[in-house]
Length: 271
DNA sequence: ATCGCCTCCTGCGCGC
DNA sequence: TGCGCGCAGGAGGCGA
Image (cartoon, rainbow, N blue to C red; front, side):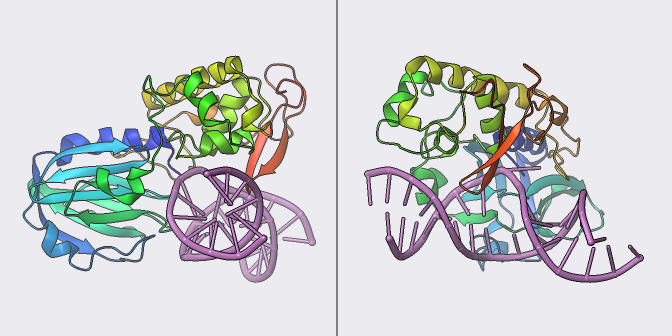
C-alpha cells in the first residue's frame, strides 16, 4: 500500500500525538512480521519517551529515551492514532499505550512490514545503509540518474523503482512519471538521454510533492495516521486505467508485466 | 556485478 | 450465494 507520500503523510499525522509523549504499556498481538518483533519489545519500550520521528525512504524511525524504534509499513501496513478505549481491529498487531489516553496502533494484514527496537541509530542498520538518494532533494537529478544507469541494462521502470538508486518511487508513481515524461517503461535504463532523465526527475518530484500535499494516494483501506483518508487516486492518469483512453491522445492504454509488476502505459505517447 | 524470479501473507474482486 | 483464481502499492535473497 504505502508509497513515499503515504509514509510521509503517516509521519505527519502521528507526529503531534506521540512526540514528547511517554509509552506506558505495549500489546504485541502478532510478532510475525517480515522480521520478528523483538521478544523483549514490551520491557524495552515501557516508560520511554518519544522525542521525534523521522522518515528515510519508506522507513520511519523514532528517537526514544534509550534507543530507537524502526518501522516499515510493507505493502499493507498503517499506523493510526486511537484514543482509549477503541475496539481492536483484526490485524492491529502492535498497540503502544501513551499518556493522555493516546494509542499508536500498527495494523498490517499482510505482515510484510517491520517493527523493530534498535539500540543504535537505525541509519546504521544494514537495511538503511544501502538506500539511494531521497527523491525530493537536489541530489536526485538527471546527471545522477544518467551516471548510475551506465551499467544498468534493465527496464527504466525497474531502475527508478530500485531503492538503491532512489528511494520512495513505487509502482504507481513510476508508472505515472514515465507517462508524463513520454518514456516507454520497457526502455533499457542505459539507453536514456540526459534530457529524458531530466523530464523523469521533474515529474517524479512533481508527483511526490503533489501527493504529499493532498495527503497520500487512497487505495483500498489506506488511512493516514490521523485517520483522514487521502484523496489522490482520482488524479492517476495511467495506473489502474488499462484499456481506457489515454488522456493525451485517446489511444488505448496497454498493460505489460515488468518484473512481475503490472505497468500501464500509452503505446502512442511513450517511446 | 547484475538481473530476474521467488517469497513472505491476507483480502478483494472477478468469472463461473 | 459460494467458490476458486489471480492480483495487489515492498523488498530481501537466491541462483544464474
